[in-house]
Amino acid sequence: MTQIEIIKKKSLKKKIDPLKQQKHIWLAGHSMALAFGGLFALTYAFHVILFFKYRSWKWLFLKMNKNYHFVSGHRWYHAILRCLPHTFYRLSLCGTIAALSVTMHQNWLNVNPQWYEMLASENCQTLLMAALWLFVGRASFYRLFPYLILSYLHVSNYKAELQGTAHTEEVTKKNAKLLRLLAYSELFVILALVLDSLLLKDGTSGLCLVVYLGFYWLRINFSPYAQATVLVVIDHFDKRVPPQYREQWNNIKDFIEAKNKAREERKEKISKTA
Image 1: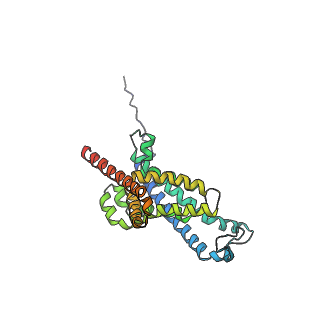
Image 2 (image 1 turned 90 degrees about the horizontal axis):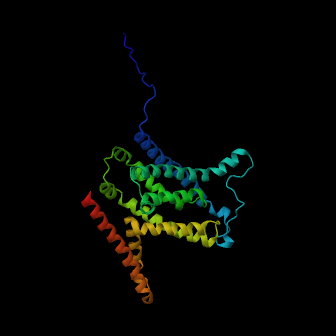
Image 3 (image 1 turned 90 degrees about the vertical axis):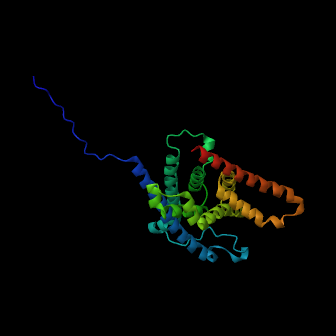
């Protein structure tokens, strides 16, 4: 009796490596954020230089002529050119969201985190804020600037990060000035949103301010860079606080210092048990 041998055909399709694919998405996302963010920055610089054309000096340049357009005309390519800055802004945020989504997936892989654990994560906070800027509010360079710094830090060190050889302490020391600028730029967004709300630039500035303050509160609780930045700002104005408000001012300082100390203790415990 002859034995029938079953030969399985090899699949000609290449097996997709999900990790490699995620790395490509991560790098493409940060590169996309940096490239389109840079293009938006150029259009914004041009917009600032020619501010006198769409703002009236009679109103101390506070009132804006909304009917003025840098690119005038009614042809189809004029409409496309007018939409380019907003398109660059949205695409930059889309790249940021894609890259941060990959980072979130890698951080929480095989873990079932609670919602408050995710909100305590800096990546999650940054991702949610990027989503807010993408869908709500006008295009603003100040809102986009922190993400440009973040993407630059990752792209400039992408080989070590993709290979898993990047050391956090070395990267932090090397890019200390940029990280400090990143922290200050996040704080400056609050001032920009306050001014937008007072000047009634759009109907969403107040909402964005409230939401951003909520997320920055999380930053103060869990981010060492935000804590250090706020403490520096508080120390800078420490001598100018009136005596009747000194107690409240010291309570704020003590609260932030306590949060910073608690974070350091928690980090030390984790390193011992790891």
